[in-house]
Image (cartoon, rainbow over all chains, first blue to last red; front, side, top):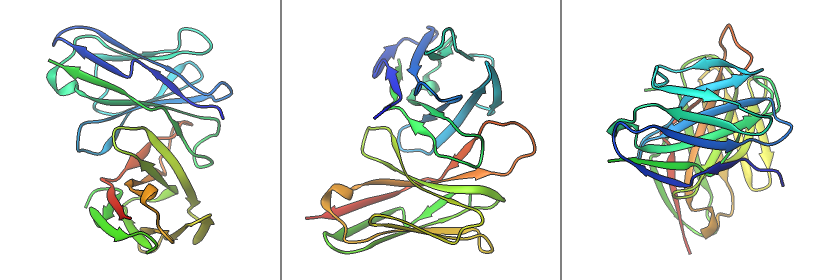
Length: 115
Length: 115
C-alpha cells in the first residue's frame, strides 16, 4: 500500500543550526502538508502546499520556516535557525483530493530535538 | 473549549467492552475525521464523516456527527488490546479561500484496552 515516507526519523541539532526534514508523499497526490506535535500537545498545522506554492500557513510558520518541492517526489521542510521550542515531532501528509473530500495520509514523523 | 476537543482525555476499559470518545468543535466544517496514533508513531486515518452525514460505520467503528451541537462521537465496539492508542478528531473547517485543506486536531483521547 502506498505510504508517505519521512527522513530522518530522529534528528538532534544544536540551537541555531539549519535543519531539513524530508518527505516523499504518495506519488499521485497533489496536496502536501506539514504538521508538528510538541510532546504531549496537539497536532498543529504548519503549512499546506499545492501547485508548487504555499496554499495556507499558520502563525507558527514564520520566516524561519520554508518548504520546497525540489523535484517530482520530495517535499522538504527547512528550519533556518532552530530554536529550543522547535523540538517536536514533524509530520508530513499528502492528499489526492481537494478540501472536503478526503483524508490525509501521514508519514511516521521526524522527531527533532534541539539542544 | 478549543476547536476539536475530545473527551474523555483518558479512557481505560476491558477487552471486549465498547469505547466511546466524544469530540466538540466550534466552527462550521466540511467534514470531521478521526485519526489514531500509537505511541511515538504517525497518525493513521480511521474514518471521515461529511457535514451532511449523521452516522457512518467502518468495521468496528461507528461515528456520529451532530452539526447542530457541533459534536461527534467515535464508538469502537468489542475492543481489543491492539486498539490501545490515542484517538484524535480533526475538523476540516470551512474557509473562504484556498484549495488545500487544513485540519485542526483536538487534544486526543488516550484509550487503554486491558487484556
